[in-house]
Length: 203
Image (tube, rainbow, N blue to C red; front, side, top):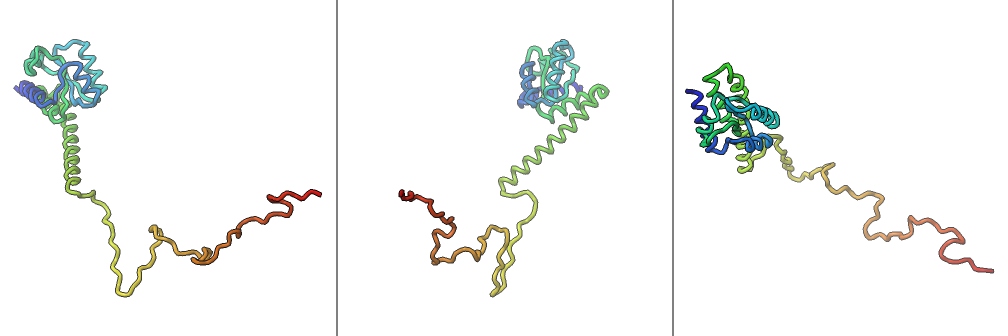
């Protein structure tokens, strides 16, 4: 009875767009790291099993041989026969394997525990993302240091110049005062006698 409920969950996953059916869609979902669980029919060929192992390795996900034939899977998914399918939602993958574990805990119990942990992490990440988007819409920032406000000055008190805040430094003593006449040749080198732009007078 529990295994039949797993088939109904697969049908719901297909209707919600969370199930890839067939070798090519399953391969694409696995290589895109969207697959959470690969399901292999009980009477699938060895070549299909090797492909399922390769796809699961590429997508870093679990693969399981389910107790349903290709015809049973196809009937649940509106096809003639289905040998390989991939669940792309972590919560649905955990629910499917949990239904399978209720019927055969020795075979599917460990996989159900692993997928439950992954589904929990996925729910936490989704909750954090939704909370972040909500805070962005409301204009809230992440909790951190609150910027300090400058203290109010007392009556008649002048604020001390702050250092390192980008304020303009005070005038240096070596800088010429405004209005003073600048010496245009103060830093030029003296020209030696006999050199320059004038040619020597020939005798």
